[in-house]
Length: 440
Ligand code: TRP
Image (tube, rainbow, N blue to C red; front, top):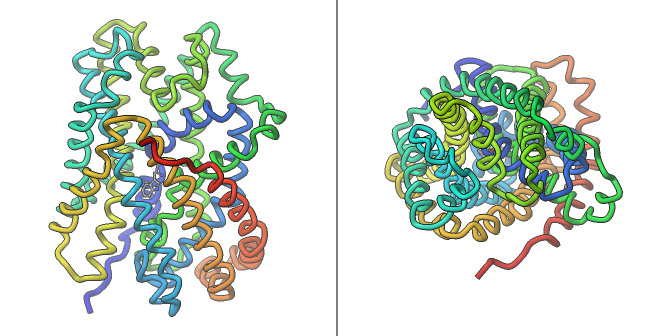
């Protein structure tokens, strides 16, 4: 048997997990989901979901991974429960499915990074987004984004990306803070804070059957839960480290970036007098460039490029992690060569993404199937497995190497079995109700 690799450092593990979690989900998806689901009340449900479901579930994935020392599907075999392999299989399928449209959005980002250099979008960002987001050119940029992702996974050069991730998170935070401060100074932006931060619970009660699955789904998606990614990453942890601290730091960083994106997008929308939900998936692509438009031309291009380049790195580090789950599953289970698998899978995923690149209605539908079907099913499996099947072993594993967690571990297990399980189940039922037929 080959010696299994492990993370060289604890921070290496945390960075990889943060690199997976922080991505388009925070910067692109969170703001427009909030806008389409009523603003601040969505934010409240999202934050509750991170605390109530996200953190317990990320710990469940960590525990499964570290105890089994196996990725995705193999983890359930290694723990002697082969009948639970479906949980890993749902995760692998979700990764495959999600990357197909994630890469289309990644392609938009590449397009905007290039458009910054040429100044293409500065005149009229709204029209520009409409022109580039669907059709043959969107397919071409989807291809570019997939090629880069495939290249990195095929050659196993993720270490470079790990370094980039180290810079990425602070850069995103700094850039977003800058934009948020700028937005604050604009006249008319106050209404944006009102919308984003002052919840209207009556509207929430009226629309709970769509807002709740959207907000919980966003929390799970953003933390990369239900994809067996965190199982896989934790399977490489060698030493006894405090998983609670790791899970909390990941969740806090991730949520912080999303909220920051909201603090950029909503004031900008308000200052521009645009209806919050009207831009849909284009929200970030329309608002942020408009903020640059007031700057002298050269400065606008430079800042635009830096912004979209950093978003590109964030998207890429998540895309790599998505392709990695699927690839490493096949490589581990069938003992095959990594390169042809990564390339073959990448090509199939590219083809699967063509409809989403052709028409955003398809992108929205693919996203709905991920977030309202695959994720809640995957997370449900993880929660039941850790809470009811692993049970005392799960508590034991969480407390390993973390004396301070030993007291909390039984509470965590109890909540997994009851509150968390019920919350996930309730979400799952509501989520299934929000599924729609494909836009044929
Ligand atoms: N969390 C990622 C983001 O916010 C998206 C994502 C969901 C993901 N599931 C994943 C990334 C699994 C990697 C692996 O952009």
